[in-house]
Length: 373
Image (cartoon, rainbow, N blue to C red):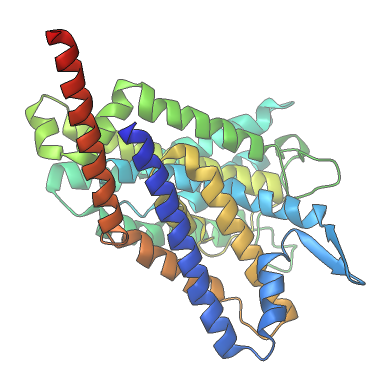
């Protein structure tokens, strides 16, 4: 009963944080816009509804775009969820996405594999390379005690410039006007989930499958239990005999694998050539999503949907009103603020804990009286 009430409290706390963050955004919109109601209309209902001649209708194409935008961020959200659960503040998911996408693209160009197995191999190789690169901050943390926050943040830009070096000097198609690779082989491209939708690929289903896999791993396996216990109390975990160093490395490698997989699926499902020349931003978004989901893999898709919806709304708002698209950064910052504030609704949480303790004591007393009778 107590766990259920705390779950309800966490959901309500998250909803309150979101509404307060939107309220902060609303204040900035009112202050900066000459047409705040029109801007809010595009922000709140524009992503999935269109209004023509006073008639409100569902916008299927826009909704599919939102679902497509969720694909890489679900993977990065899961990656951050695993690493943060072990109290490892690794931020290299951004670079791992770019590296996974680049390696997957090279496999899609130069590997000759027939049939549906081609994209699977490309994604797996991209994920494996990204997992291996995560060994750098993981081993530095375990062997030398270096802060994974610093080393992983620096690693993002090292990965970016290495990718750009090989893209510019070895794999660029000089016949094209922009710096990009040769086209992928048709067998390597991930097909569309819905016919006529060029952005929403089968990667969306794969992402949902991995939500279930990661949730089962975290809550139904001894490795997931070890990751969570180390995140809660690392000294006690070490005292109880857990292999703390190996588990820390495992959590960060899994984060790299998931991020690289998201990058490969995004590139092979959305494009027919590799053209990322800067960090794509999915790793940073994954951090926001993991915070929204409270490091629970089951809630990752809902948090990713919220962020994708908000992003689409801000894009529409900046296009059809006088409010800049950077408004999403303000709203995300407000979400960070309320979610990270430990004292936010702390008194209400304390009342729940006290009430649960009283109920448990009363139940124990009744049970004892029943046994005595």
